[in-house]
Image (cartoon, rainbow, N blue to C red):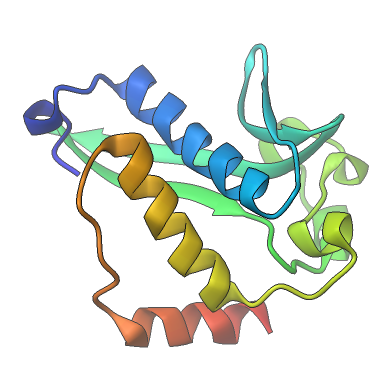
Length: 136
């Protein structure tokens, strides 16, 4: 996204990405929130979404990583954002049901459009197929 064209600073862009996730989680009955001094989205005292962006010449790349149906055991081997593995959670863990990545993508696009005030559409089904393969 061209932050300059949209009149966004990096902090506001990150805040908006977090808001997209909070809005999406709300649509499925999960109350996400921000935690002071930490980027990302939390549910209770557990992190469900990490945010990482790169901005070069006003153009952003990267974005957010929402734990949808993640095997949380993988976090035993890393310290995501310097946090202990038991501080991570996922949509599936919290909802008690399996959530399809495609559903999340479609709903997140709608939330992104609302938060950023932009018309958005999904354009690359091959990318979605790759995401589905990675999550399964």
